[in-house]
Image 1 (spheres, helix red, strand yellow):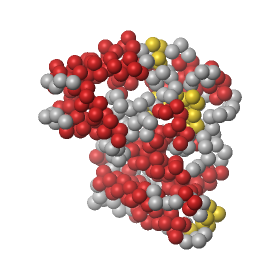
Image 2 (tube, rainbow, N blue to C red):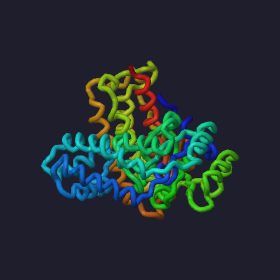
Image 3 (cartoon, one colour):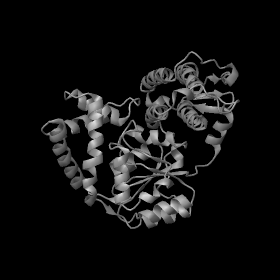
Image 4 (cartoon, rainbow, N blue to C red):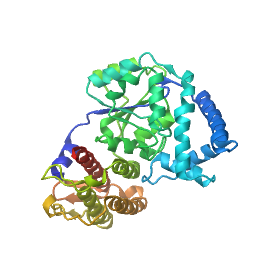
Length: 403
């Protein structure tokens, strides 16, 4: 289990320390002209669609499906699953048939775009420098392509040998949001086990990289003009984060973090083996299903109720909830892991609906916590997001120990 008081003290009192760097790929680590690449990609998609699916102008269906994929995410289905579902709805093909067809496209057609990518001479130096300094590294590319396509571009940019240095690579099969949606960055952050203010995003675009990263509470470095890779490495090596540090917690960060955490949890459990759900690799630690059951119980009886209490009462006293049960007293034998995850996500949506009703002037409403002392509505809402991430990290570690 987790000592929540200890973790809260660690999070709330320790000065910001950058632990992870999220690296955009296209036109950050490699050069790949967006307009030229998009035009060439859609041309090949049209040709493939006509040949494989017998559909003229298949790229129009694909682009519309991609737009809907970005617009209608609830964090529970991967980007690729929603994309294929959207295409299937516009054609006579099943989701499985669309999935199989796109797999062939990326295996046979996508590699023909290699000539569009130009290596960046200083990209390898950037990656090596950050890795040697101990930062957790992520390829934070827009996850609208499968992993094979991301690997292709890394290899075309001369960076294929560096893949083991990355803790996480975002792609269409493991992500539930896409750029520039704010939950995308929150989802990545939850997957790598850090807090938003422990992250710096480096990218070439204000709209896709810099602005959304800052909006959810991460730091950012805009790779453009005088802001070179050399300058970034110099500042990072000397721990000079001028202009890069994240903003203080603000109310607009809450909902994107809540949604991103949903995506992170479903990303982790999407690959869990059925026999893992009830395993306890450590006798004094919860099983995966117990972790999710705790998240569900906490959402309904602690997290949302606590926020409601602060909103309804003047400077209320918030008692520490009863400790969750130890593993041997936590009975989940008859429950289904995925079903519990969906129930938690349903409750989280209710919490988000509640959050969206809060007026700007109410976020500083005070409260007194039995352990944390003086606090306010914004801090406790932020703690709910932190509580998610603690258990998402716990879930990831527990699954990693299962056999």
